[in-house]
Length: 50
Image (cartoon, rainbow, N blue to C red; front, side, top):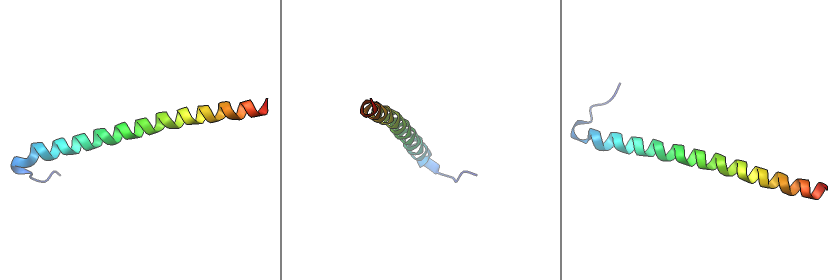
């Protein structure tokens, strides 16, 4: 159930939307960086084994 936001509904809902979008971007960027760093670490570790 959504509370009555009155004349501020647009501002509040857009703020929620922007916040959720930014959180999604942060999560995706963190995952991409994790994969990149993990691959670099694996390359370094393989270099030491050789």
